[in-house]
Image 1: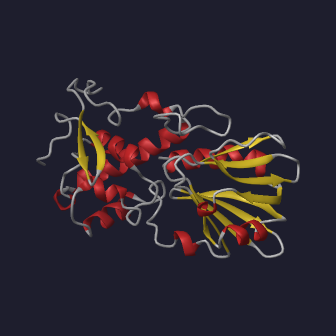
Image 2: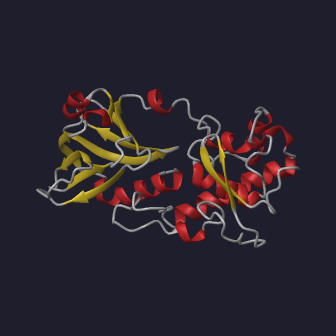
Image 3: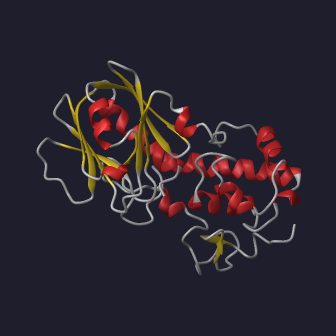
Length: 274
């Protein structure tokens, strides 16, 4: 958390407030938040840059800046990072680690209780996101199945591999596998062409639906810019539903650990044997 739908929601929420705004000052209160080029250089170099565009790549939020030298500001929220907007001179809480003062007096603040979130200020974003796989909402079924055919191992860890496809995390991997009726421990090389196509459709369905509903809020850590929770929480079919009845067959959802990640599935709908 946050995953592709939450980052996409954040980008959409921020655009009306930030496009065209200029960063007049940056303050960094937790230096390790800045992965590159270092907290002091980051604060100096980002000043007087105008935010021209806000996009997303995988789980990365990307601010395209224009100033004395074009820069790209990338943010990975990790587990608990998020942005919010405040009036000037609002008291800073202990978990707010970066503050951007904008030319209209508004402050864009980065809050991250677990302190795992990271930021980069670079000239070429490929330096940060170059190794990511294709976007799951852009890759065709044929290309997706071709990429699957080149891999081996268990299905759930592969979906979490950001070099395979970018943006899927624990929540949406579990949800997509439930919709595709595939066990998370199923061997990738055992999938039929039909099952591959079913998984591709399931991924697209889950991510598209989650974006439309503003992402998923399992706890208080993820909130939209306006403070609202993500609306996909009520639509979950597998994730975080341990011992609750499967919404397809009524069998209690089980939870196991796969690749050190809690994994939820229906043992009736998602059998291990093909």
